[in-house]
Length: 135
Image (cartoon, rainbow, N blue to C red; front, side, top):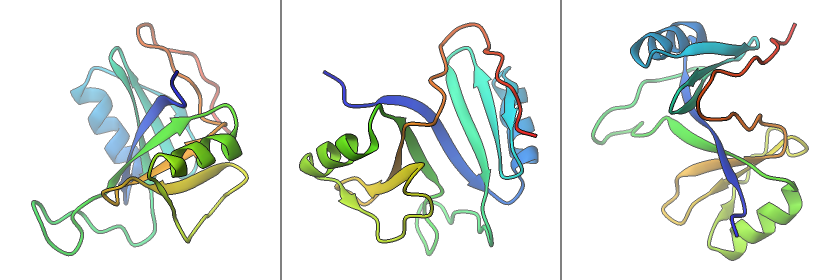
């Protein structure tokens, strides 16, 4: 039985609107949700989120001082239960938790960050959802 369901792939950036417009155009998607910090693009095959972060630096690929700017947002029913199970499976809890009542930041065994949240929309594959914008 699955512990979580993939909700969004989140891409950090300096300009969420620019990045969301690019991915929506490239993937024939639609921006279905916006806040001051993020924009969600839904496509027929999945969804991604462009997230504005302070002092964003693009990755230096394939290696370097900033090699990664992506993390997974995983939708869960219960944050505490999901966090405990993820830790049991080998995840580590991040020291910095910006919004622990909304989401939990953990690292997979290789050190890649991911977030558990009970508040992310579970967006269906197929027809584009009608999600209200924050405002």
